[in-house]
Image 1: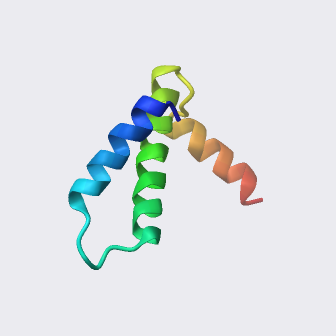
Image 2: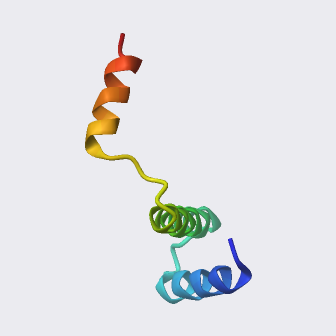
Length: 63
């Protein structure tokens, strides 16, 4: 994750913190935002599977 994205994500998370928030809550949100960022980048790079590909692969996995 780029430092610019990290800072942006931390600011977003900090704005939503409540007195009951824990460090684990922050980590979970940061992890989620990072995963979304990574998924969007994979989509831009054409690194996705079609529904048909997934169905074919899953049939092979379930044998």
